[in-house]
Length: 346
Image (cartoon, rainbow, N blue to C red; front, side, top):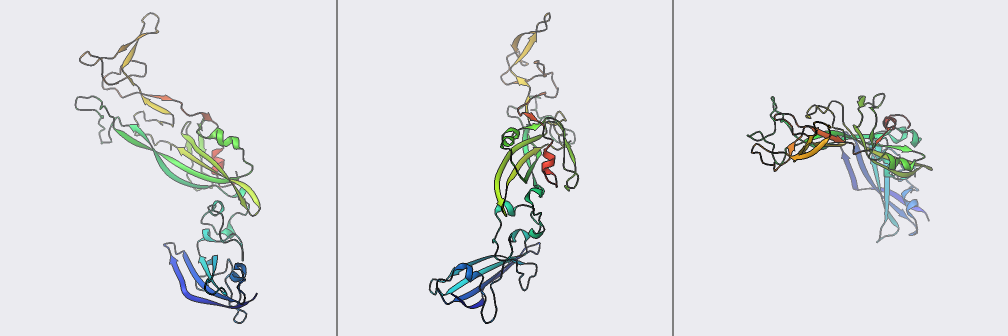
């Protein structure tokens, strides 16, 4: 089996360029063989015996765009003329499209590997996966809260013209930060995935700073929640490791000035203290003697819940509502989280 000729065809030349001046280029070649049994490996590495024209190898530069290198190749044997192969070659200047190997190497990295250290030339990426920094992205989420006062220059209470609360309260969205972070670990303690998920920090914790490029923040107790933990085994160049991902929900310090209590709500349950009854204490023993129905101005039992003062008594008129908090997330030492997010090894 031998190659008879290699030539470039001009039927499938394409060029795409984005706003970052990254280019993707396609070229097409025709390979003629003397045996229909010639395989794809021989066709995609063919060299013309007369002109010396060769199918580009992985990593070869494009003749017109030096910043673009050959990143993938595909071939198809012509059904009508099985002595002919059509080879399509793709070049790209995007570092995340580059192959992990040299000439004849794999066409693409696995998604788990390609997503690591994005934007860095693969030749410059840290060779040992366990020494690579965490890959981090930010977004926002929202918690819904009852709006006690509006956001006017002079805040107005959200009540009807008679000063009563609306049956259906007005809500507003309180934002928190979502951090998605992934890094490589080995070995993996699978018990940690189960233990730390849905935990909040039991003490204040410092995030970022140093060489992370993100301003350092001190997150107070209860304001960092591990929403999700996951891990996937990856095999890269003969090295096995675990690509571990974490989703954090974080309340940024001093972002709670719009809340009635002017303090962080945390991620635990925050319930307005309301009810149909109030408790009456025995004047002698000081213990709760009984619960009595709260009455309205008409001296009749209220038909909707009334505000309480946090001690089981009806809240006095024109007082701000009281909120009760319940710890609905287990506490844990999460001081290791910042090391996970750091630029250095974990």
